[in-house]
Image (cartoon, each protein chain N blue to C red):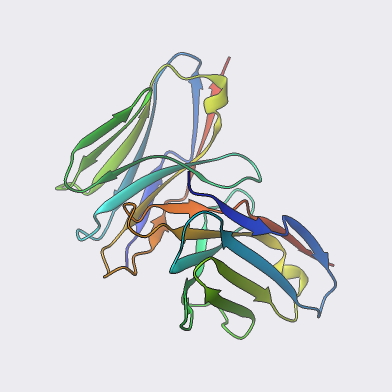
Length: 114
Length: 116
């Protein structure tokens, strides 16, 4: 099955600076890569996703890049703000005729230092 | 936007009893829902995939007789923790796949289960 690794596990960034979180996946058949933000005790919120037919996607301060050859994808947050502090999870999904399931990375606790 | 509602948000039960958690997709139909378990400061671990009208598919190591899943309609899946023990205490989260909309997956609010 799919295995997703995520680094770093914790990340502290000065407010206004950029944050980068990286994930690697094992199964080259994976074609969908979402990123979720989770605040303590709350549901994961989808913040951005990318499919294997594109290499980069951007939504305001958030961007995701995908390198299919190397099997890794990254989340980039620019101009970080205190409200960006949370745990971020990457995930990967393998096509399976409508039975796809997400395999999550281990999470990155991002702290924005005011 | 797509909304997934989970109930109850918090529940305390005694050891040996059973507790049911509901997961509803409020504004879309979900033929597939997922149940996760999350321990403090850890990632989401998939327990089982729930398919409407058929048996759930459980991940390796998850006891299907202990974690009963029912997906009787296109908007509702339930997880019943049977004969609960303190080690079952955890944060349980469901998610639902919105078919036809890029198959995006949306999460419920989660349920904190405490077994005393």
